[in-house]
Length: 182
Image (cartoon, rainbow, N blue to C red):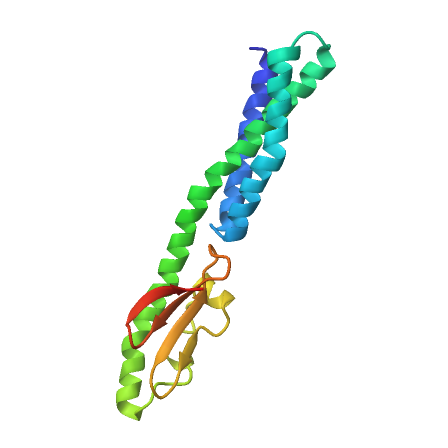
C-alpha cells in the first residue's frame, strides 16, 4: 500500500469518526438523526460505492491515473459516509439516557404532588414550587415547554419523544406508569 494512500485512509477514518461523534451529540438518537444518517448513506454513499466498484472491478488501469485517483477518493468517501452509521446506536444510547432522566425527574415530583393534593383537595396547577431552581431541567422537558398538567381529578406529565415522528411520553396519575402516545 502506498504511503499516501495509507495517510488518506487514516484521514478518512478520522473524519468519519469525528462526524459520527458530532452527530451523536447533535442528533441524540432523534428521528431526524436517523433519517439524515440513513439518507446520507443511501444517497451519497451508494453512488460513491457503485462508482468505485465499477471502476475497480471493470475499468481499473484502462482509463488513466486521474480517474483512478477519483475512484480512490470516492472509495474513501464511502468510508467516511459508512462510519456515520456508528452514530445511530450511540445516539440511541444518549436518547434512552435523556428519556430516563426526564422520567426520573417527573417521578420524583409525584410524592410532592400527592402531598399537595392531600393538603388542598386538588392537584396543583403548577409544579414550579417543587422544582429545584438551582438545577437545570432535563433537556427533553425544557424542549417540551409545559410538561405538567394538573387539575381536580388528576395530573399528567408529557414530553415529546424525539425518536418518534409525532410521539409523546405520557404519565397519568390514574395509571401511575409511563406510556407512549401518538
